[in-house]
Length: 109
Length: 116
Image 1 (cartoon, chains in turn purple, green):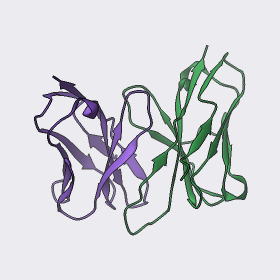
Image 2 (tube, rainbow over the protein chains, first blue to last red; image 1 turned 90 degrees about the vertical axis):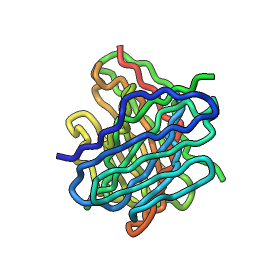
Image 3 (cartoon, chains in turn cyan, blue; image 1 turned 120 degrees about the vertical axis):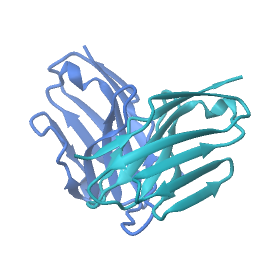
């Protein structure tokens, strides 16, 4: 079966760095995306990786290792507004997007 | 540029009643998705359209759910009859289908359905 694993919840301190991991087992691979979802709102796109390596975009970076079925989202200089759920989603060989359950990130002052 | 529009935002109905949700995607986006999302879970795909064609409806409970996308633009998702377990947020998303590259999905605000 297809499976995406993420930690359910993480806590970090304002101004610090946090890494949210995602491991996946899917039938084929055609890219991995990260989305941010604030409570009561819709998901919004953060990043996309299809090749191994690190993609940096401002305070957010996303890493992919296809051989390990692993990705992480790195958030630097955490701000209170970063409190949200972070969803990992993998596109399989049929170009269907498989979603993880999300990681709820709590930022403390 | 206007985003994905959904209505209604909230709906409360009694079980066995019908309900319909409407979605207007971003102009020019040929791919449209309907998801349901339960609290603390990721979105679950119900149906995906490419233009007017439903290309993936394998997860749609066809005994009670139906969807249409007339003229490849707006879409309607219907539940008849609704059951208690259908209470969830129903999300509509659209994208420019690019099979060979990044396929960023833009989500509407969702419809929160409560079935009593």
